[in-house]
Length: 620
Image (cartoon, rainbow, N blue to C red; front, side, top):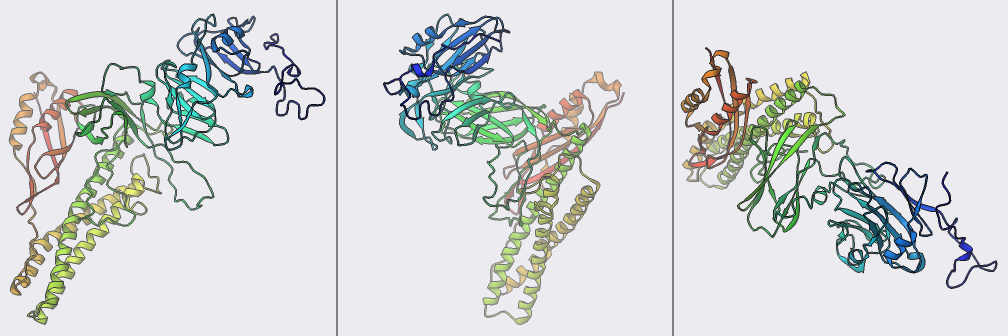
């Protein structure tokens, strides 16, 4: 037990509205259960045995021997604040960086002083410095970020960031505020928070989120304050890419909302990796963020805002999305969308490019630690997802052609039905041809639905959707069988589409031309052509080290590419099966020299997917 650590002042000795209370005072001490009570206790995380306390009568005391003895610092604190009487101590915060540093905030609203008061010591309370000058210049804001016209009110809590001692957070009677320079200047913590009393602040040790406890307005969370906690790390760099916190691959529990307002649910934080960067001025050009895997291959390209100051882009931990032009593609009901597959866990590089400037940071992508999944299952899921999304891309591209043919055929039959010189036999034949084309298009609609529908499709069943959770484990036998069935259906549908384009459309064109109407004019489809297949093989053999010949290394290189209308590879993935580092390195060199002629629809280039694989064996 310690001695009484307060000023030992009886509350009856204090004036209330200019007079001391007596037996005639109505509601004497109304709302106050007592006086001379400890209101704040803090232990130093840096030096064992250092304890601080604050009390409602303004007392501030320090022990450096685990509470065996205490030093009274009250008068020094009062002198630093410049108050005639010590105020209520609302908080004591010990530093995570310096054992002798502590912050004390004081609340004077009981004495008709609603201003912000806080002091700091660097030498175990021997001297104190007021932070009131910086605090009083901060402007409070509304929930939309508009200035209220007033400054910061009484301070309830003050926190120092555990990793960055320059970052301080304050909870006041009218909001939350932050300082990046250890209290010299302050600004509102952010829009979205009303000008409400903030009574407590926690900085989540794992997520680096700020959690605010408000008075009657629930809990408010600011997700991932990485740019604030790293704000002073590269202050001399005008353009800064902050080191992102590790991202976790997991699946949110999804549910169809059916209770209306019966249950309140706040929105979850954005899924994925938050990528934060600071620009010195507005950038008129394109700001890009590239995600590179461990072998330097691009897995995702994102566009970022070019506003001056802090900017954030969230990567959803997926590969580049598939094409999705709804002006030429009829999306199925309950469409899961064009999102790409999840990446594998590992270390990735984030590359920020703004004008001529480039910055890079590493990003760790972790698997859900609550799920026990082997590396083999990770790979099996990834390979299955790649196969599924390749099928989805094929279904999209074939669907675009089928739906375009259907639209042109529909216009053609309408024109024929309105023509005067069409025989009943020709009109009936044209209707039969259009029906055949419609059946081909319907076939692709069915396949696209079986793939992309998030409720009943394979995508939703395996990868999740708006109200389906999916799975992060390897595919089941049933899912594998379903994929093979869909592949077989897609092959048959592709054959029917080729027939419709080459034969059915030609027959309909003949009827149109005989009537003097314009033909369907459907572009002819061709496949992309690899320009230098032989060169690739020779290059691989030239690059392969002679010293490895005796090892008899062999391996397979598989390359998937998405080629745009200009024949330029926009997305490329390389996978090798040798398990040999040098082989894998050379495989990347091989992939970089691969060039394709553009795929064509008649005279028009078109974007397409390319899959090419090579098998090399090196024997002694």
